[in-house]
Image 1 (tube, rainbow, N blue to C red):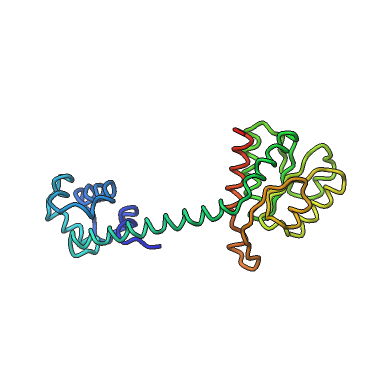
Image 2 (spheres, rainbow, N blue to C red):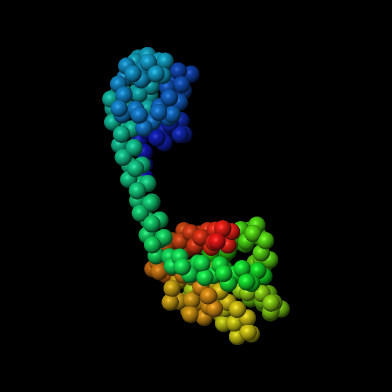
Length: 238
């Protein structure tokens, strides 16, 4: 996404040298950005304590023919920003709608009964797991992050919480099965219907499709972060 005016105001990377007056006008533009398309140049001069000549000179430095051209470009930036924001909101709502929130409540109840937790995650999910570990420690849980399967061998009174967006990673499947086969409890934040979901004693799942061949979509964690935050809120306030 590229903005014609907004980026100039934020970076102030302009070829021609800016005067103190130029900087003051730019400050006014940035502070009143959303209003500019609806005000006249005379109103601008009055409110910014400047002259029409100073505004026109700055407009040319910015690459515009005049104040009207600047106003038009600002209006386009506002429309682009609004569209981008709506698109982001739509994407986030899609994630939320495809998360089984009721399962989050069930998982929070399980964790409250088992405050000694081992956390496991790989790749991008490892970052999410580390974030969850910090949140759980703030809430008073005993939480140990496990980076190698061998570390699990001497833990028998802990519950294992695995975070995996796909729930089908070979190492994740191996860790979950071995820990559970030893008579321990496994819970997870993962994809509905995945191997990890099926093997878990309790799981908090999503129904978002994952393209395993596309690294970018495979590694995305927004839905996982939403789930982690929901779980933390349930543990804290629920």
